[in-house]
Figure 1 (cartoon, rainbow, N blue to C red):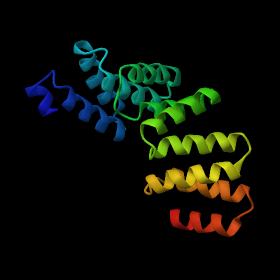
Figure 2 (figure 1 turned 90 degrees about the vertical axis):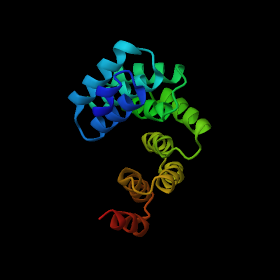
Figure 3 (figure 1 turned 60 degrees about the horizontal axis):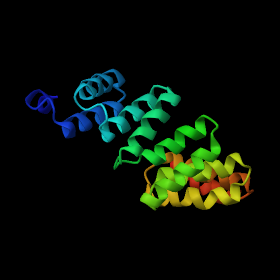
Figure 4 (figure 1 turned 180 degrees about the vertical axis):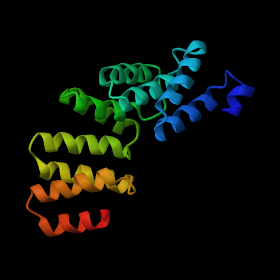
Length: 173
């Protein structure tokens, strides 16, 4: 906050502060920072990306989609495509989610969130064998993410690979 007091139009400080607020669950604080930033730079792609993250955290999924799409159109450097894919899955817009995840992987082949989205889509489609490698890649690229581990364990269970699933779940405990 001190950086913003000294340089109120400093987008890098606003971005860091908003991201930290979102990560720590201070959604009101994030909203305050993003609103102030919006007054000066309403079309800033990073601001739009963070507004999408905030909307997602608040459960405002349609608003999150809108923000992420605008961030992508503004050449946002963050993982807007992968986050868009995650939100679209929650909205049941599966083909759009798949396209967003593939776009994310074109930008960054090691995007764990995009691999996880593709795994989730395969699970929704009833194909845990196709989901397994996607979840393994998500875990490989973001080994500290418990969601990727849990999803991999679930895919293994659904394939009847109980011992392998037990090992994955034991790693989580």
